[in-house]
Image 1 (cartoon, rainbow, N blue to C red):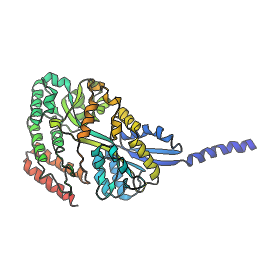
Image 2: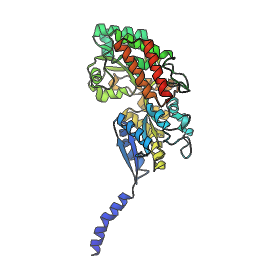
Image 3: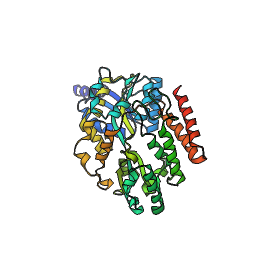
Image 4: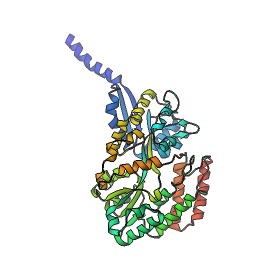
Length: 413
């Protein structure tokens, strides 16, 4: 009978130990979810009784869910992953911890991070609402085989916009393919150049629209129209199936995006094109960023100490930052993570080019800028007006005037 009692008690004891585990939740999107999961074995050596639940949704679904959760102050994770374009909107919710305050006091670590990424997570009213983990220094990826066929040198693409367009016409005539996927890509880069300290892409330091006054918008629209009028773009939107096919088949010569695109090309967009792609400086030497990932702690988190400990491991641990880059192409926001032999190694997919050194140099040149709550909406408005210019013949001045009015209206809400 004694043996029976002990036998029956064992499952109960096991269940009790399971139920005694502390659970923290991380909300993420691909491929940040993979970065977090890969980091857990090392972190859980220090916290063996903590279960980490990673809730992953597609990029747009994740940010919609987090917007709803912050608005309702319910259903919030302990650690929230945020793409940089949503920082302003999420900060305005007032639902995130100020990491500059005790017990976090992150300002002691400021000098350890890329300056522009640190600045993006600062908000005048709500403090340091997140900590950067990866960044997207801007890069130009191009098909070297297409350039050779057309007799174009890489330097022609990077020199200036006149040279860029001239190279595009030569590529079209001699190689029979497009320069870029969409004329909008050119506009996107031009409006990112020359952003002044304290400003964002669309708003000035006071939160007023820059669309109608900053010369970079008119120049961006003009260059995009020249691309379209010359038939140099494939008229396909980024991340569409048609876009993926264009990159895969070599129907598009140049794609300007964050350095992380190199990993996407290698792993799923165009794996069969190894050796045919290279990375180079953006036209006119523009140093800008595309994307970046941050971790925040909601004020409603029930496990803030553990959440912060995990964020420290993900962002302040050199080995973890380098692991995320080597395995998932998450370019380190931590400066210490940008050192080491891996950065000097040739990238086989890019024909043996030491591209990581170029990306690191670009990251160091990017100037800090601000993000605003209505940035995603402002981007939609500007893109819609550019489409009217490209497809309906609307004048650039009228399009920018209308875009400015709508962007300013959003700023006043």
